[in-house]
Length: 299
Ligand SMILES: [Zn+2]
Image (cartoon, rainbow, N blue to C red; front, side, top):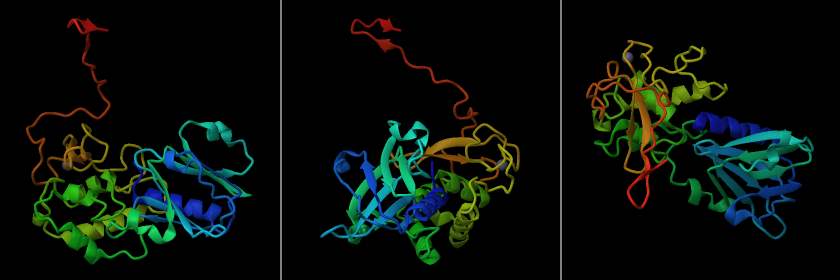
């Protein structure tokens, strides 16, 4: 899932391609926006706020400046191609949600998780709830720490994932930051010995990856060795060799995956019953047989 560093790179790429240019075409394939036409407006800038993308546009005739807001959620992306190129057939892809065309470059939003069009003056309704943006110019570490500690019994992993606490952190940086501080993601934030150091660590990890395409926390770019625990369930911890575990964290219906090493990371965990856990995707899930009305099992 794209986290703050990926979203920031996406914003930079879109900004480089679109800023200062007039839109000569626009296709928003989104229920409420299908009839919106942004042609004739200039792109002022493309910025990121946490995991949100803000494409700011000039006022149209008699209108007001608008912001096209998008969020990549689980698997969204924006790519840029030369206007007039065949787009390798991708523009007709059913996953395309937005097409912004300038005379030189065309930006295509694919499988976006959110798309909104609001007056720029009302951006706050979409991103005003966010905590300090880890990669933003106005990064405020003290405010981030204050928000992190607001609920002392909350599991630290859950608090780190809350965009109202820190904007830009997802499961990757949460898992790696908890590992590097030696704490289980289920440690109550009130028990984190040096919360300021944890906030600084998250900031450092995201910044280290903001300029490169690989997400790495180990300093080792080799495949399978880029993270200490994230996405390594069942594999040996890179530090101690114990099998890395994965479990869900967060409030019901909003659970996310948390990877951790039961040996290197102290503190509570709901999976410390000693059961081995298979790597995600290692075993195909068996489907329960579908029962027909008469109770017989269908194939
Ligand atoms: Zn370990």
